[in-house]
Image (cartoon, rainbow, N blue to C red):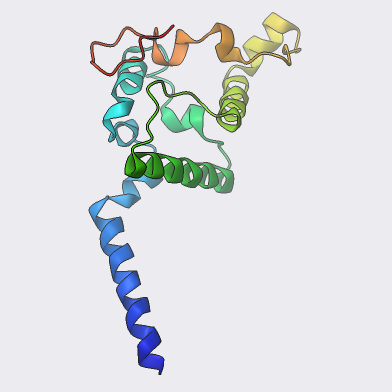
Length: 156
């Protein structure tokens, strides 16, 4: 009776193991920006970052994930799940937009890196109804719609 349970469990572990190996899963645990560009729909975003002003100071995870260890990997897991399911089911939006939870993380990271500037400019008071990137949209990824790629986000 035990063998009837062990065999399917071992088969499942083998399938998951092969899947993780084939997809180079461990690359997604790091901070290399080229990993984010593995999916072609990210080409324009990666290209914008690569030619944008933040490249020498920040990579994708510096802005798009929390910096505390456990929350960072929770966000990475959630994002990975959404990316994989979108890819598998073909539900990839034409214009990729950050979810509200992602916007909050990005805002926190803007302030974390630019805290002194925010204090100097805004007397320490942030306009609670706006995100930094509402006005500074082109800073991290360049102007939208400038990509030479055919699947660019041309909507402004």
